[in-house]
Length: 449
Image (cartoon, rainbow, N blue to C red; front, side):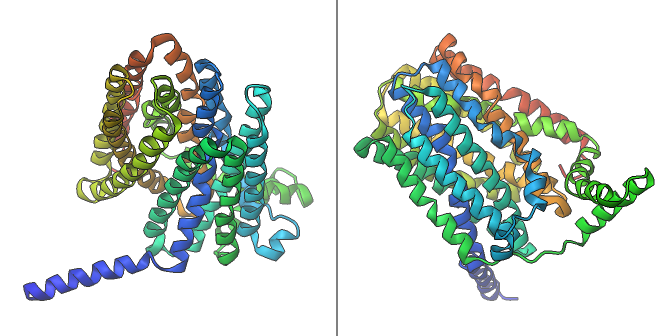
């Protein structure tokens, strides 16, 4: 082929690849990703600004991170979401879409409740509404992950995942920067009510798309195997059928993963890979408030500019995967995420310097976006396609442990150490994840990591 013909061929492939993102089924993932990302900041990131503004102690703000516990435990009820059909609604909308609509309604209700609560008067009620919002949001995430995998063919999964991550980040931007803008001008209830209205984007996306058609033969085979097992121990009839259902819904997805070589080592790596990043993220907004930035500056630099830096990081991370492979990409991103925490030490010394904040936030979000792109690709590679929804819920739940339980100590650390020492500690906290990456890559050298 001539040089000109080869160039035209590459251009044609590029154009065809771009068109994929305009397909309705791929665009739908953008809007579902938006609905998935919208609640996350409202249950802690944006809420932490509200708590800091109203004089809640740093230690208490750090403990509020624990309301994200449902994100870490969603694998416990993922099998029920996967297999239980909602009466009436399932017949009307289909299994996946009915669960999506119910979880979205719960998210909207929890947003309004959290907006109405006053943390300075009743912090426990505020924490309860934040917990309910996290539970509804985690449930929605379970269904969206399953819907995306079942809705798209194999050759559209990559594009669908990219669109979902983009929408997720857009949702976080709206509930981060957007909510702060509204709160600055109209108050906190108006901010949360506006976010509840924005959830309508996800509802429309569900109603506009069809219920996915999937092959359930593998699940039925697992259920039959479970019933046979119960019959062998003398349990038949309704008990045997219930046992078979539980075997297919709960036992098979987890046993398939947990009986793999080095499964627990891999899960430990999933927990700690982004631990340093999560620990720093818990206290970033209170840090910026305390050293003198106002909500508008945080919205414009930390949220808006940071959003575009994150998108750049997602693109760089995806490119890095194709260039150096997943193991080296995980190393590069892990080191950059650790170093980005050190940049906040410089910010702590300089104070409320907006230009420096832009540089620090740009570096931190670029590194974080790269790490997210590579890490999501890694988690996806671990899933057996027969159990994608439940296994992905398991893996993402373990990933959320660092963001919730472990990182909830961030406020106490910041209060005891001071800001400079705190950000140094978050850098050190990234080291266990890198050690686990070394162990995992060595022990799975003959297989896909």
